[in-house]
Amino acid sequence: MCLLFDRSSDRAIRALWEQLESLGVPSLHPHTHGRHVPHVSYAVLRSWDLARVSAALRGLGAGEPARPQVRWDRLFRRGRAWLLAGVAAGLAARQERAAAAVTATRAELHKHYLPGLAAALLAPAAGTARAAAGSGRRGL
Image 1: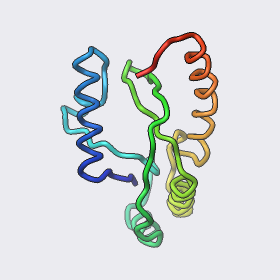
Image 2: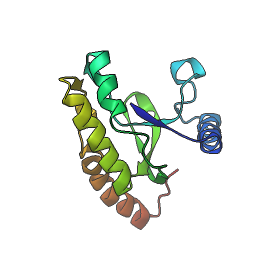
Image 3: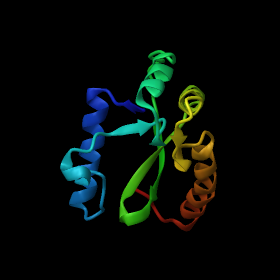
């Protein structure tokens, strides 16, 4: 289950990926043979019953539009640069509801999509960003 961006945001993210690649910084631009779609994942399942999960997700409704804001960057495995978005309370709550809905069907949620993980990952980055700012280094 994921949140897709509107057309202008999608184009902006793709343009950023292309710019990073032109500078020699690996991005998600060539990922999945250039067909990668910018998105925010609410849940990634390792095992599931499609009918049960679909019914549970239909019960959540469409939700309000979200406006994530990029706060800093991070490098992840395999050398790709990923931009992490600041998470609004409503978006975090929706992810928690999605995770609860799918796990209630006995689906196995991937460990990286457990509710609250984003906050735990972002907290150490704030100290890193302050240290980088104090050293005069600049991020992406």
